[in-house]
View 1 (tube, helix red, strand yellow):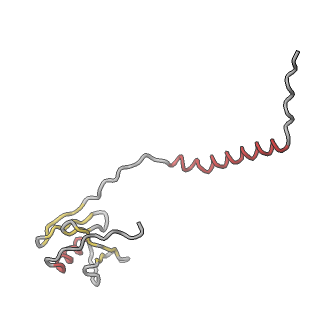
View 2 (spheres, one colour):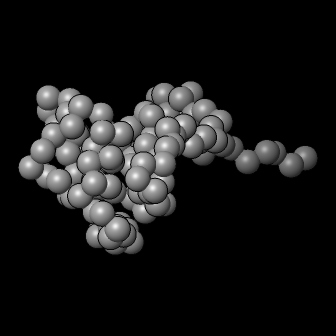
View 3 (cartoon, rainbow, N blue to C red):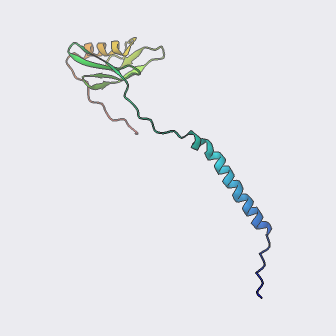
Length: 124
């Protein structure tokens, strides 16, 4: 009766195209495997604990794990020096052993003056 149509002969171009496609897929999978394996569920960040005290009528909060210092709720810019001491913009010619000592010295220097509100960061 009817004969089935003959399959098209496999050409060199078809073989090379199939091999190239398989190589691209394998390379992509190999490149993405470490990324996909390393995906972890999102962790919620908890705020760092603060040491708080009232010094000369001013509220001082110092982050225990870093260099965040607040005086009456306003941030004081603190920098860590290479030798491990701290300095700030209020008294930038003197170094202090701890952020708490630095905050107390800033309160002494400020007197009754308030810190300026934090300025937004540029480029962010």
